Image (cartoon, rainbow, N blue to C red):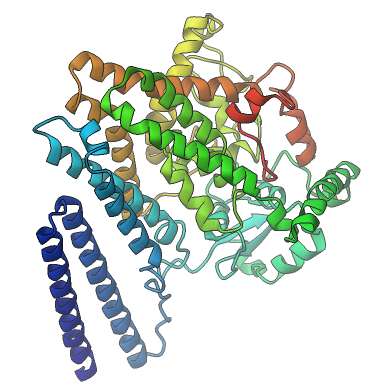
Length: 526
């Protein structure tokens, strides 16, 4: 008890010392004539983070003391380890410096006279909300796999056997593992490990195999998620599978040897690829101030820049194929959240669509707008489908597919029904994760639909709120629908996983520059 009280007193003194230093820092900023508002926010947030860190350390100390009194209590996983990382400080400093350096240019463009302070404060809060929302999922939600004492298992079923991967340090990161929790993860597992031998994979898995008496009691989120459709027995010995793996080795092997890197590193984005991605991002952010200032030419250019940027990195990042560092793959999509919530995209696209392309009641992409379009036999015919070939209807659906569909309606239905388009089961989120997700949705709504009405006249505000996301949505739908829903591949099928991926996809635009920039270029994970 004496040690506990001493630590609290020491911690209180330490925090007060920090507060004095922060006050001196703020005094310096004021005397130097630097704008105060972003720095006040920076200080408040930094102080809050330090206080939160101290509180968690105190909670850990209490847990340790209670464990020494009662040895039978399970040792609590350390949820505070590495919770305060250098990335917090770097991001906050970067945001503040960006705001200060842009004084007189960026702010003058987006702020009217009389609303200067309000615009700055709102924008700072939106930027920080984006950072915190992404940080929660990287180091809090999906990214922290030992966040609760009672969550001591990560059960998944692969080829009919249950495995507990809770203690497995996966090279691809905890998010990749978390996607298979409570599911039949065979298709996910096989599709992301094509360059590793079957013997090596299952030798590792065997260490985490669940005892038979425990496995009998385990169930997937959805009873329909039974791994059906594909035949996995003898998959690795199939001639077509062997040929595909040989082609992969023939392609990536020389790249790895030439660059002096591992085979896994060779499958990720090259320096040339990174240069293109960063250049596209810079073009977008250079155009953004003019869009916020109401320049009409930017109304046409910015949505297409957003699409081209997202098409060239967003998809691959969420497939864990941009970088060998899972944090980079997970964090970058939050810079451009206008296609979908990354959390929802994992369920819709990675777990559902890519694992079970065009398979009834397993691929959620077959049922995005069943009331208006019927593109697969699994969708029940309705009278409203009679005129679905009308171009006016197609343009309407494609224009609202992202802004209203993926971002709002699908997200809402998934959280209420706990299933994405009645195809992919969705685990009930914790309260904290739901709060973080709702904050992300709120940021999306404000950044697209709300801010124009505080900046422009009514008619221009309506145009600025509707046209950009509609234009972006149309480009996405135009370039994505031709991949899998053409007449030749919409109902194609095979029980061999790799054969199925080939017959349900369409090759086009080989060597075409239009497709190079405007269509996503699939990486190995596809």
